[in-house]
Image (cartoon, rainbow, N blue to C red; front, top):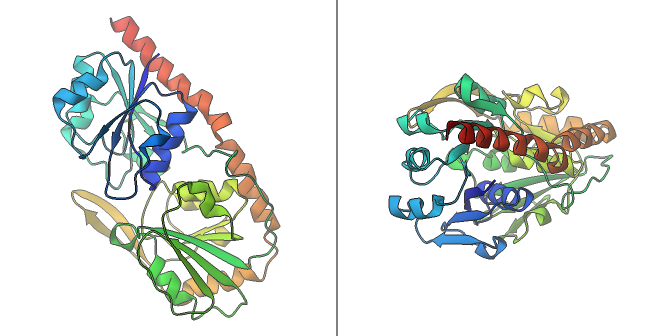
Amino acid sequence: MKIGLIGRCDNTGLGNMSYEYFRQLSIDKVLLIKCNNANFPERFLNYTFYDRENPSDEKIKQFLKGLDILLTIETPYNWNIYKLAKEMGVKTILIPMYEFTDTRRELDYVDLFMADSRIAYDKCPESRRVFIPCPVNRDVLPFKLRTKAKIFLHNAGHGGIFGRNGTTELIKAMYYVKSDVKLIINSQYPLEADNPEITVNIGNFKNYWDLWDYGDVFILPCRFGGNFLPFNEAASCGMPVMTTDMYPHNTYLPKELLIEPHIAAPMSLGNIRIEMSFHDPKIIAGAMDKIASQDISKYSKLANDYAEKISWDNLRPLILKQFKKLCEGRQKKI
């Protein structure tokens, strides 16, 4: 079974997912998409590297030769690829992001939607979907028991579209926090916080796991989103996750750690309707004060239990099983 991957090599969620899928599944061929951020193509041993986001049909045909399975994450960067793959007998898998993977006709050619969030799964065709959470590499993200919420960690990244990570509201919230706590923010874009209780680290960590060296609780009052890989990474490290009380996060995270949004309203991202949450900094501060006064050991242990269920060691067999099922169908058709 020959597996191809269209992936990213930057330090973003998509880049980190591409990296782990590459090394955890023994990917045979990789078509890397170069983005404007710092890129690390050397992570991928056997890759075809393009300097633009839309590789041509001809280049894609060359890439697809000899493959049995093609894995794409959120987007193939050329929407003709699923049709081309079907014509060449290559089965295709898309890991969809519900807020960006729309209802375009090209998705009719996708053989399997491997959704890693319930909200994405809900939007996929019933006959072509499977739910498998985004796995975590526990070798680089080992568990450490957290007992007190003294340091809150927030990974702002590039801020997220429409300020989705809630960084601005979180910074404002620190002015209302009464507890003796600190906030560490890791950011890949210029960010200032005029507050002695806030430390801002600006830079591009080469290894994503270095983001998790410090902190007791991971806090991300997101405005929207289905798959937040950082939640899984935080859990692997034993950090309880504080985020917005919204679907699907409120289906698997402890209710006591969720932050009630001030306003939640439907909005449009292109032709996709989503629910957008907006936060009151005072409510965020109250949630932080509440958890700061508690022993968080039980939440740390719950995080560890969840992370073990979604570890690569446990999910790799399920993922490869889906790949093999597609290949068997391909061989029978031929």
